Length: 382
Image (cartoon, rainbow, N blue to C red; front, side):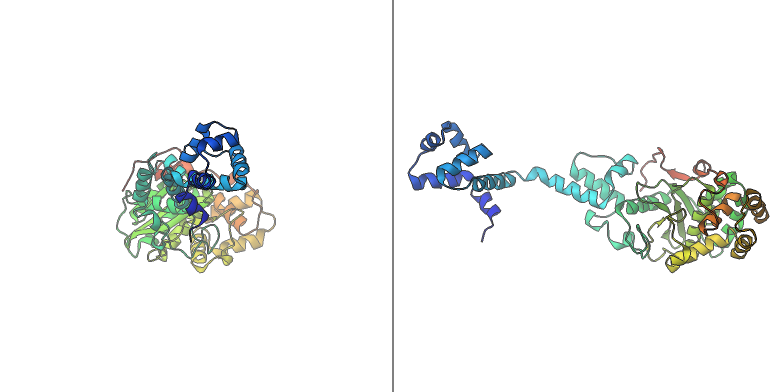
């Protein structure tokens, strides 16, 4: 049985009016005279060229003994089905915006804008390297890790950021990655932690150890800190967002992702980007999945050994003066910001404590690393 909408599409209001006129033996002029309107109005309704207004619907209802709603519904349904083609593009755009942060991708220069929806779809598919319906498939980003919270899947914006990282990583040169690369990287990175300016050497050091490094500004509301991914078994990549411009955040994020590289995390199952690694929203290490606990432990152990920081806390708490923090940092050969970050994460001091030590480092890093964001638009790389 046809639905009302299908009947309305097949039988427009004009057909119903002609049937009513035939049953009553009326002409269109007769109906016009009964309704007190010009014959051209009745003719327009019968031909379907004139929409039925509320006033006309009430007039028709009075003439034929029906309800006004009957004529309004029939005319509305008919006109909704009359020219559906222009709205197909809207439907396609809706699908595109559901799977990708289209406007931000255009703003960042990741894809070119296009008025034609087919052209826009082709550019988005070229960016992801797959058809629209497969963008959210598992092999692009299949993770038992965090999206917005642990266990959630990554959001469309997080997927786009991850895809951009994979694309740009191909443009970064690095030496051959070997079984000894991690140890070599740690040995070279550790002396750089004492001064903020030394962070500029991180991209070069990692490249020498076979690890590609790049900086990509996060997309809005993604809370991305970094990711470990692999182009293949011998080409690991670390991408960071630098959404917090502070030295302790930078080093913890880099070492956390290096911990993932060390365990070959993401080699067989693509990892979602790490979110909220530091700050007041960060989860405690023991509440995270095991893969994240191991990466956190790797990071902290290679900044400050657990026994050292725990002993310092035990001896000094709660009197964490700036002088004592500086002295401890000097003995460890690291910047005071790193000590501050670890004390904050452990809940030993408040987040507002000694913030003057949390020096900015983003400009230092982006001066030597392949960088996408903060107004800098890179050429398309395939």
